[in-house]
Image (cartoon, rainbow, N blue to C red; front, top):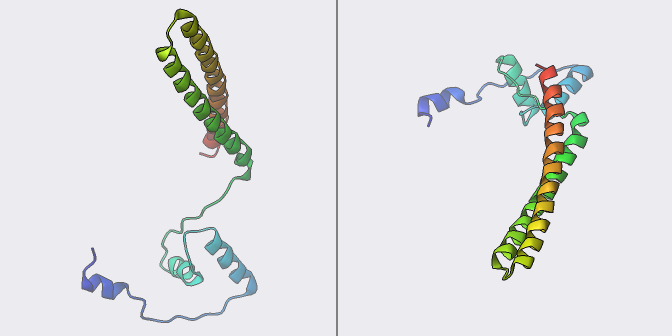
Length: 135
């Protein structure tokens, strides 16, 4: 929590006005849109005080892999629900024939999980290679 002296020092009390060219204005507006700054004045203040401006960029090449990851997540969740249901049916079944039936259905679901996890690991591997190229 700030004390009153710190709050008084941090108030914006002095007005500074300047004119810029259209090109400079467009660059400042673009910086505002891609950063954590909410106003053009905030961008200018951070530049003048040499504070860091956090810029956010979207890599559109990652859209397809991210959509596929979301799809795999949904599929794994659905398979998990099915496995839980099959397990419950297995434990409540009365005879060995029913138990073996539910066992086989659950085993098939685990094979589906294996396929999805392999695809998931492949995607994550490709994404990590792309990520590590930038560093």
